[in-house]
Length: 494
Image (cartoon, rainbow, N blue to C red; front, side, top):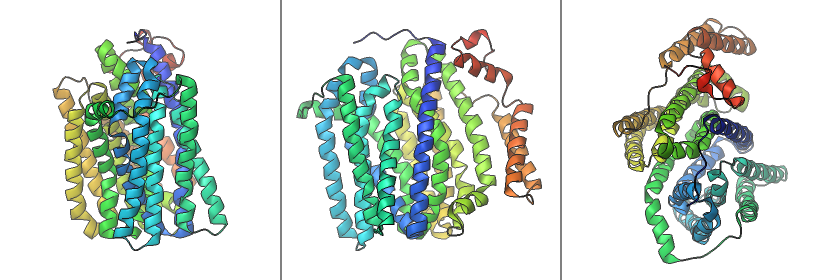
């Protein structure tokens, strides 16, 4: 095993910050491309097609977990500790995962033809599932870079994939193509990016040692099962609602929900990328320095709070304006959905925290129990609310399920000795958001630009004056950027 380099607090945190910035910048571009696809589908083909697309994305996200079967989480840990074996680890599973991906696409097409008489549903579902499974195979080649805390490939691959897909789809739409033909651009783009990424990995880590050894594959699958349960349950949890909504409420309700949920997912990208960059760091710290582990996770929780709570408040306050600007008057129900589902952002931010902490500390069993609880609550609440309230009912059910899952997982991790804590300044941040909401309410007759200025000023002033954001937070950030030890310049959070 290759010896690990010594942990340098500020150098590590500076690298974490730079990786987060790079991943976040990349995901901003990805979300803009996603917006282009969603808004384009809604405006060109209508909300029903948007519903079909969202349903297909949900099914694809669940099915693609069966490509990796949890092995990517396992390999990330192993490559982090044995980087010289990257090509060997990758080659052991590439042939198997590519074969499974092809089999899933073929099976999806057969089942879709059996269950649906709609040619649009059949071919859109097949194309989107192919896009997802090829994307999952591509992530196998990104593991070597991620383990070395090199964020470039993880940043560029999704941009290239969606950018190329959008260009091809736009050309198809301009030529008058049907929706299935336009969306066929997505698996084509995914296949192209897979070829480029695998070539880059071979050049960086050496020749791919491809093999198909049954005993070796079974060993990886068995050891990766805890990761698979977490990934599969997470995918099922985040996509089950859309599948239920399509089955009960139809494609139109799903289209309204998807229009709002896409906005929430875009904001959630920021902390998702932060925790992607954080995982290799805290995995190393858990075995080397648990005091630093506790410090870094607390700062991560505080950052999550200060990002998600104000963002959630702003989305809820301006839900009607946002939906009108993006979608015109075609999907008015999406505004109410957005006002409710925006609060899911807060829960998802801390879901990312507990998932990262549990993965780094090998407590996958707790994650599994938390996800099972969340899925059960989501299913029950969804079946209760969707028939009456449609997309808004699903938004409420999602909020209840997410909150229950994160509370259970947090409590269980604390019980096992993982040093997680409620971020300092939580009550102050909540009061600041409440004051900002009051200011916006008093200014509700002003034009949108003025209301935005009032909200931004009121939120910033309240966060600062109430002490939710403190001077030593900024001093610590400045110290990280300058690669100096922040402990010599600031007091720890209290």
